[in-house]
Length: 291
Image (cartoon, rainbow, N blue to C red; front, side, top):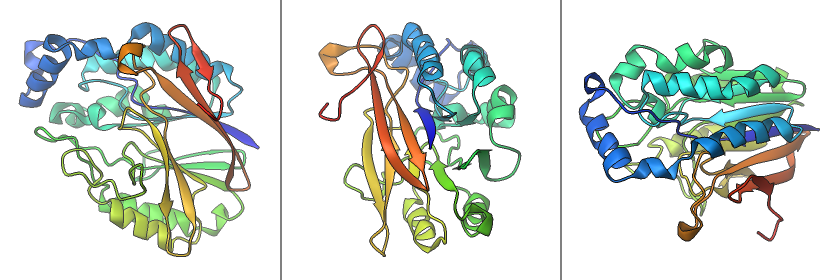
């Protein structure tokens, strides 16, 4: 058995300079600093998250994006600095989110790769981390857009995923697919909302339907109120999907909001145990199944 820890949507943030203010960052900064959304994320909780992930006997860590708020260089620097104790301790795969590709300058300058290249899963079109019996395959559907938050997996990544899932060397291994965007919503429908969704989710579902090897689990983020769902395939197989929820969220009990993360026990290409952790205002605590 292997335990995979999962965090997402941590959102370290820093104020932009005047030179950083693209059209999208003008709206984003107004949201953060005028409307006060910066208070939705707490540096204390973020530091406690890193300590918690290092303390739950995980074998591997997966971060499914949105480490930053506006893909600013100081935000990436802070994210790297705060995550470094975890990166030094455990095998970790870090995938980008749409906020990590918030504006063209961040992509053009390769800011995500500069900060997290050694933990980004290689240089090919498909991110990959192998550890013991576990293989994590990672996709990057994120791209800068003018105002929306929608994503789409590039064709070369889909072809690389198709080839990986047809590779006989994966037979008998436990496979996890990671990406920032959910493939399906809470009800199991393709998450294709034009302003916020994964526009080619149906194509990914078809790819998984045809694959000789199916993932045991799909890990994602993007929707801050996390949820569990499943991708239903034509032969009746249901691949579990877990959005563990925003892991950097400030404790706001009056709004029903708190930071969350998760861990999964995996064996023989199945999920054999689920662990959900919620921040209770003091620390991350494991939730009972009924909660």
